[in-house]
Amino acid sequence: MESPPASPEELAELERRIDGWLAAEAAENPTIEAVERGDGDEVRWFVRMRGDEKDVWTVWLTLGQRTLRFETFLMPSPEANREAVFEQLLRRNRKLTGLSLQIGEEEAVFLAGSLPVAAVDEAELDRILGSMWAAVELVFRPAVRLAFDRRPGNGT
Image (cartoon, rainbow, N blue to C red; front, side, top):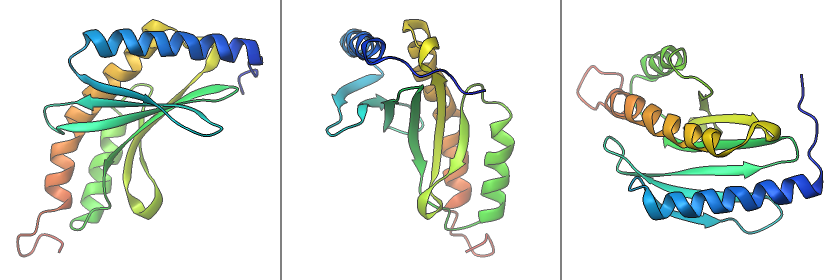
């Protein structure tokens, strides 16, 4: 079932709350390297994250009338072992809560999810960034190793 649309006033208030929460987190949380706002018609934030397995990556938060969408680029299209990589990622999807691994343009791999606008609060924003950080840490290195293995006989 589709979430009801938020009013312009509700969206403006939520935008203000997200701005405030992200500013506070950027000041206190060492895994958040920077926060920027997008230009244009979409209400969008770019949250630069620091990880262990993937050094630096960006979460895009996009506020719509009904949902807050969140996504990050995980890796480019696999150059080797394509079937094995996509099978591994599909199996990893079962372990993710509120997120999914997706194939995007040019078969690049993304991690994404969405939340109804009415459910967005500080605890959910924390859960989103924390879950994305944990998922990138879990998935990135094994997928990249398999996807770019150039040893003879390994799908290249």
